[in-house]
Length: 299
Image 1: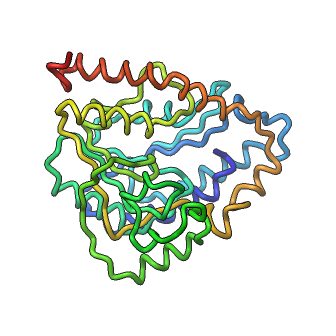
Image 2: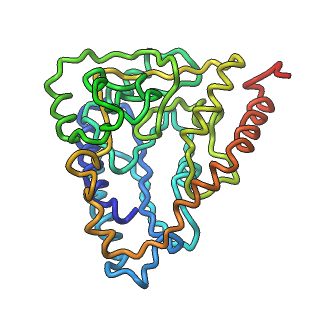
């Protein structure tokens, strides 16, 4: 979103640093989208013009040197969102990743995740880095042990720069571990081609925003119970998390833009609509897996 442009700057900086650690024979293609949807933002009532954000978005691309970049600016009247972006981004890659614009990650993470794929034999898999403590126990499986004693009610009190510092001084072993109870959020995960394109693709009638991560968690749990070769792994020794926690959680790097942008308030209803139809989506997803022969012999 336009008001996330400064987080995009931080992300692009980390991606630029990351390129130095990635082997030259690995080609990474980045699809990056600025969402100037008229459905979400009334630009006529906004004090900052969308041209300001478009220019900054275009100027930032120089930081992505060394990658193949597909840059898109959406200016239509529909609720273009992450579901549309995911569908538009299928490109027959070997692996896919999602990166939300406000996540901190180390400059070594991409190279380590790419290297980790060499040690995985499953056809369908997800690799996720460690995270800080979250609001309930379902996230503990991928939580860095350093933060396990943080109360659930204080999950967003730690400064993101403390997390960054701790990761740099900790002598943690970098290793892959099998996740017993799958958990991911689409923050900065790596997906096998078969997982992303075959097992859990974005359905054709999905538009705008919706909890694809929650859907895929439930669908893969069902598929795994029916014999599908799926496994999630956590990459220990690499912790990611959202910048807007600790001292940044109240304002962060968006409020000084949001104060001058007129938001139409239509985005939240997208998630509500998606969740209201979750059972139908899961049924359709399961039926598609049966039709494809990924799940077979099911009665």
